[in-house]
Amino acid sequence: MSEGIRSPTSAKVVAWLYIILSIFYLVYNIIQLNQLENSSKTSDVQNPQFDEELRIMVILNIVGCALQFVFSLLILIGLKKNSRYCLLPWLILHSLSVVYACKFAAWSVVLLNIPLFVEYAFLAGLSVTGLFIVNSNFKRMGSISRNPEAKV
Image (spheres, rainbow, N blue to C red):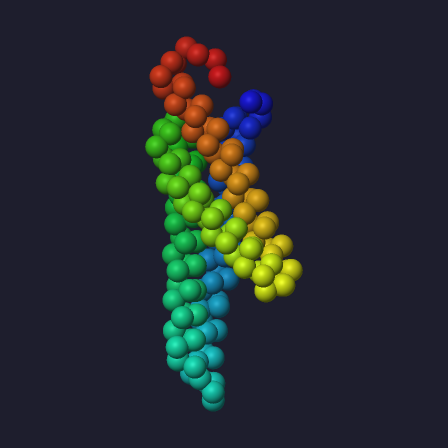
């Protein structure tokens, strides 16, 4: 495996990228929740079931963005302290996000919604790339802890 992928710098770049992305998504979802609250008060035709489902979805997105932010900070802490277990929550979360993104990418193809497919395919690709980089650092940290003299 190439040394560039396994270097801590590449994992730091991934962590900072996801920190920035999670901040933008967090702000976007908070604005969306605020607009949803305001539109449900002023709308003449209301569908309370749809509004409630949309509100739950936006709140879950906010929680997911907050978890992504915290777990990305854990990557930086884990790389600084050489603790591979700080990388584990991020690996678990993004394994689930790949499945989530692939599911919605497939569903958008069924609905013939190409822009949505491109968005979810991009998110799935970004998650897979991040998983590959962070997982290689996770393995590297494990080999260092078992054999400190080994050159990785």
